[in-house]
Image (cartoon, rainbow, N blue to C red; front, side):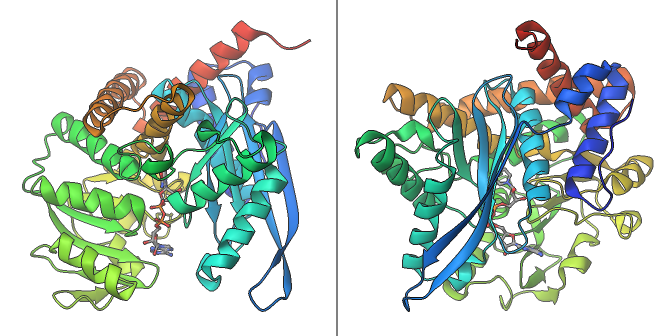
Length: 421
Ligand code: NAD
C-alpha cells in the first residue's frame, strides 16, 4: 500500500520520498501508516502588541512527527510563507535526520507566519515570548527541544529559554529546553557554525569517494545565511574557489573566485551580498545553472525542480537547505549522474551539535570547540559510510539510501517498543 496526500504540498514530497525508501526495504503496511503520519500538529493564533500600541494576531505551528526514538527535536522558522504543510514535512525530515545520525530524538518542527525583518527588536521579542508561551504545552527538556532555523538565531533561542524558565520553573534557568543558545547562556561551542561545518565534512567525505579535489573545486552557494556563509568560509579556507553566492535579493558571480571574508563583511555592512564590487550580478535562477563542481543550495525548499534539473552543471550537490530538490528533479539528476548529498544527511551537523548542546545542558558540563568539532566529524563520517554502502548495495541514489537506513531504524525502535496499549 502506498499512502498519498494532496498534490503540490511539501508534505506530499516528504511522503513520496518515504514511500520510495519503504518500498526498498519492504516495510510492512502497519509501520507505513504510523511513520507516514505526524503524531501531533498544534496551530496557535496569538496577539502581539506592536510598538505603536496596536495589536496584531499571528499564526504559528509546532508539529511532532514521531517520538519513538526520544523527545521531539527541530528548529523554529520565522517566514511569511510558513504553512502547517511545510512544518509537517520539515518535522518528518527531522525524524529521519536524527535516525541517520543515531541521535536519541524524534522529529519536530515549528514556525510562525511572519516577516521578522518588518518587526522592531521589541516586537520580535514580544512575538517570540508569546509564541513560546502558546506552544509551551509541548515544550520541555525531555519532551520537545526547539532550535534555530530560517530567520531565527541565538538571541531568539535565549528568549525561548527565558520564557519557558519563567513559566515552568519560577525563573530558574532550564538550559536543555532549547539549543542554539548564545554560548554564555549554555549554548554549545561550535553550534552556530555546526550546520555549515557538517555540510563541509559531508563534502570532504564525498570528495574522497568520488575523487573531487577540493583545492581545485569551483563552488556555487545559494543562500548566504547561517548555513551558506559558514560552508562558504570553510570551503574557502580549504582552498576551493567559491565562484558565486546569493541571498534573497539576488546573486554575485566571479569565475575567478570570490574573496569570501570580504563578501561576508560587505553583507554585514549593507545587508546583502548584492552590490559587492568585484563580481557580476546574477539572479538566483541563473546561479543554480552556473558550471561548477559543487552546488550548495542553502536557502529554501523546491529550488531544483523538473524545470531546471536538466540544466544543472554541477558534479555534486550538497543540500544545506531542507527540501531544495523535488522528487522529479532527483530522478533527472540521478539519470545524469549528478551526485546529491541529501538534506537529511548533509545538513544534520546542526542537529548533531544541538544534541551535544542538550547533553551539556542536562549535565551543566561544557566541552571545548575542538571536542565538539571532532565528535561532529566522527558522526558525519560514520553516517556517510553507512549511507554510501547502502546506496551501493541497493543501486539507489544517496537520498533513498539515507532514508532507507533511517526508516529501518525508526521502524525497528517502534517494533521493539510495541504499540501501546
Ligand atoms: P538563514 O536565515 O540564516 O539564511 C537563509 C539565507 O537564504 C539568507 O541568506 C537569505 O537571504 C537567503 N534566501 C532566502 N530566500 C531566498 C531565495 N528565494 N533565494 C535565495 N536566497 C534566499 O537560515 P539558515 O539557518 O542558514 O537556513 C538555511 C537553510 O538551511 C534552510 O533550509 C534551513 O532549514 C536549513 N538548515 C538550517 C539549520 C541551522 O542550524 N540553521 C540546520 C539544518 C538545516
